[in-house]
Length: 463
Image 1 (cartoon, rainbow, N blue to C red):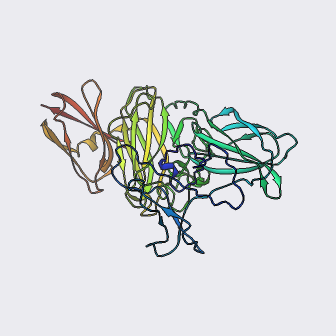
Image 2 (image 1 turned 90 degrees about the horizontal axis):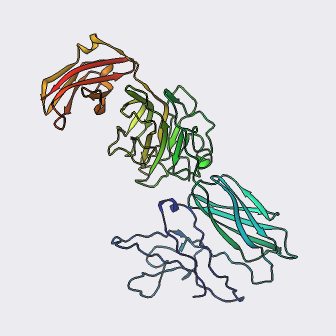
Image 3 (image 1 turned 135 degrees about the horizontal axis):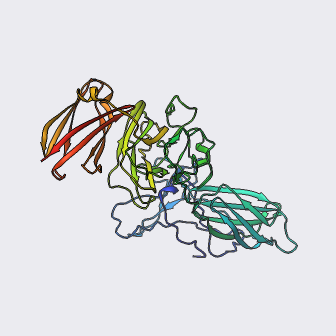
């Protein structure tokens, strides 16, 4: 073995992307010498299920016995990839070499002036050498970018905050000759802390979005996007290119007629089961119940959107979502009650990908978060049934046809504290919903049903 690279830990962000593994030692290769280039997959500790992290492509025209595989456990003779596969195959490995000629190269490549989205790379030019250089850089969430440069200091922009990058520079000596590369690895700082919005909050995602964690990744300073780039990140529906989405093919009709743009999650390309979070930072210290509403669409598949709440600035989130929505072939208006009174509340819209079996993406639009201002309707309350009352363990809510079929429901104790909150999803013709109160202390509770400008309050006794 002449040389090897450092170990590289594969992550979900490496799927459908190129990974560069520079050798730790420069190796002169005499002309006419055959060289074997390979990769070794090491299973993590405790791994019991086989998996294949390397892809293959059809090799046309075929090169017989050029690519081999071998298991790391039994170490049999290498097996050509063209055997038992119905045609020649090649591993997606490319060895990039420098000519074995005298070509003075740059030295001392360094990264300075680091910002969440940028860095300045500086190197020492070779004495009496080239004034033409090739700069390549890549990160875990960004594909490799190669630039032709002529100066020894280059400022990069559009980087991802909190990401690790590897950069290399080679000098050109003409006639296709290049020097050995010099490398540097650097990590960009995390994004600046989000500002907490004040009520009421209204967001239509019109943009232009801000570059905070990556290129155009946040609707405003009150929002954060995790991950900031890549297939599982959120973007304005027409700007997937800024996130380096692999494609932009998921069916997507938009998520509302009130505005031109919306927020979009790329379920079509995001790996199965991976998540992307779009977080709203908001001050909810004002007294009173808060209602969250938004437009939503998801044409099909098994991808879902969860709404979670954190009261400690995003350090932890509640064990269960306050709302979960799946398939919605038409634009629907979703409603959830937010019980937080914290000045450092984070509302998380967390999408989980199904990798596009239904070729559809998730759409979010016209988000509104405000204090409850609905008018209490005694006439409407008289049409709503609640039994048994007093309740022993459970009670049933009976709702007639009308606006209360899709409402947010909040159960408050005698101190005004929220003890249960959930959405009500009944057909337009009305129906019933059961509530479990076995974990509540005996006493008098208030059940609030809120939809639009209508508010119904019912008294229930738990024994």
